[in-house]
Image 1 (cartoon, rainbow, N blue to C red):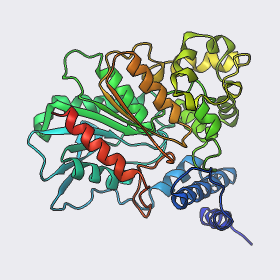
Image 2 (cartoon, helix red, strand yellow; image 1 turned 60 degrees about the horizontal axis):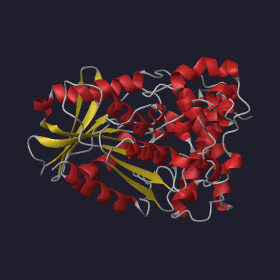
Image 3 (tube, one colour; image 1 turned 90 degrees about the vertical axis):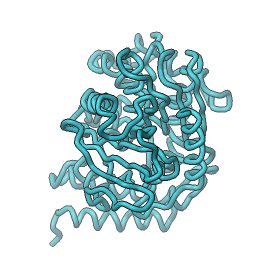
Image 4 (cartoon, one colour; image 1 turned 180 degrees about the vertical axis):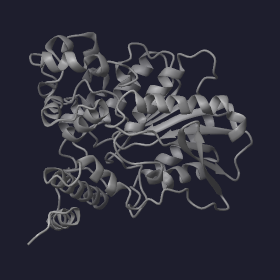
Length: 408
């Protein structure tokens, strides 16, 4: 007789996902590194099957299972020092951070505050050790990685406020950590890109601290207004089971602490915003006309302004229009720091980054945009057995050149 335990569910999921890998998960034509894409899709499918099965059986919540998977290869301690890099954990008041200081770094050093991704729900600084370590070594700059509290237990504004608090701590305690306050930047990927953009936006409004030198936003999630942008429509099937529209809807709902099947369905179908809101000025902040012409897509498949649930919209619109929750909703971006925006061609979030870049340009901000050809969401994250994607090293080199220019 089978026992309904997590290992049992895991075994079934692995067997099923392994079969799907052998029979090949469909990958959209044009995606490079199909081995890595299929590996990520298989891993995502295992997590989805196990988390869903465990929750249905009452064994564990889906979020706890997802976190269990992502911590399998983590040891919750900084990597050992090398001849090139010294890594140490600190606590900024009550916030855990990890500081990566290259041995060739200046004292005080130009510094990048890094905020990791994971849909505000999973992952940690441990999962990013390989990435941030290489960024620090190749650039020669100090990196400070923030361990912010995760949703849904800590919904907005807690992660944002924690990252903001950590950034301010860097400025006010710079001497303690060997930071050059005149040369501080912020960076983040995916949900971390959201938090980095939000913190950069808030810091641009403060008058008593030095200005950020730049923000590096890597395939950032910047709006929960429309799940029918051209990239959501065209890339939803780019890598099945990995990051699709319904997954992003779930992550946004976690950040709001309203993750129910009916709410996820409302977000995915764009029924979470009212007809009135779809006709408001906020709709212009996610207009496909902000994109390069080749990405305009079939406008008939984009936001239908003739439907929307007024009840749901009234519940959430105050938050989803908050620029610190969704930076693309900011009415004025003229004061934000210069930006290097990286997007992935086959990512549902591609248009979030491209729209934000264009709106910053229109506001007079100095912006560099790089849309990585053939890449999928997460191509900058590797480690724990995940091989680097084809364009990762090139993107890192671009960052290093950009940062050196900005930190002059």
